[in-house]
Length: 525
Image 1: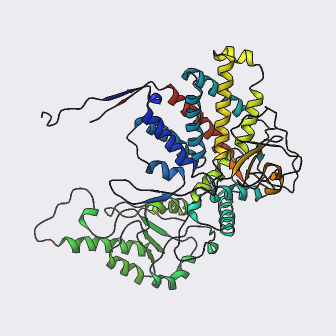
Image 2: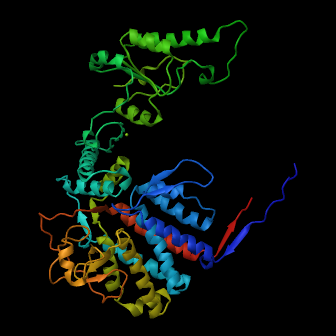
Image 3: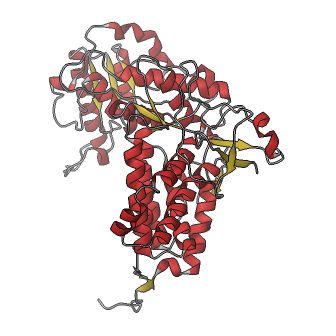
């Protein structure tokens, strides 16, 4: 068949970062994401101009997919960040803002693309090796003998989502519950391969957040209040349960396969007979709990309840897997065969659960509140001055280009910390430990020690002899002094070590990929 419309030629864009329109879009995206990060980040309402529902959010996993773009270059960056978020559930905004800042800094510095990518890759190596050292100044070891550090980590994640509209008391309560639920998924004595349990989060309307609780087992909705007088039937040991993944509504379309209907046959009554035959087998096998993912025919429901069986329908696909894991029951997907004996048995918090699970792989956390970013920036500025001659020889650039690349990299890190300030205040760094501080805009420099008692993470207290510098300004390079930890002083804000380390790598590698792109070919059909 011939084409009705002539095929449009593909659109080729050379050197996309020299395209003003693309650069403006990248800058707008960076400003948008900067305004969302942190506990006081601003919510965004996203609405497609061709219609659809309105999304209110500040989290990257929801915001980035909602922002549609016809520009493949921008979609490349979005896809890379979303891939990180899907794997680690945290630090998506950090990765996106750092990536876009690195691209912008490279363009503003006038560095050749290959020089910028080489310097970025070298400095990323400095950062990752430092973060993995035992004496890293912005890393905290998590003590599983105490739940306090885990609660702090969980609270940092939950508090960074303003759309939850939680008070401090409510955020702390949910954080404690998240840690409690997480610890219940970790087996105490399990030889061989360890299998973690699963957390299912069930939202209930009309109740206070402070009424939330953790229940071992699985909480399912039971709209049939008439079943409650039969709860004593559940105390049989072992309890038999049957789980159906197919619809038991009695519709022909739900039976599947090829159906041959003979003239004069009442198909409805035949299907109902089949359902009741199934019910009789269930009663005979002494089943106490009958659960279906979809709908159950009312007659079958009545028959089962008349025999003391508790019936739950419309369970939904979300609860099928955890219920299978919990009970050992195998979902039955057809009515055409008898139920095999092995089919009987003997889910904002999901992100927190995922991050807590990452601590089992690496029991460490990074200082939050922007302190890791400023500390890393100061460390890189100082460390990059070692063996400059040898480094520029290996990277194939001049010393001036190298220093410009270092400055852009460090300013990009600092810009992420500065983005945490949303109320027109000043973002600073102390010149001793290189931690991040925020001060109201009307505070004079000589009165800074009185305006903020602690740094962003809560470990460093202000003092009269403290010296500061504004972020993204020139200051003499120095080696951040280690903190002499007082056991009674704990960080107030923590970030996931594993998630942030990967986010750092993704941000730099994605920025380098973007700086390396020479042509974008877009199919316009």
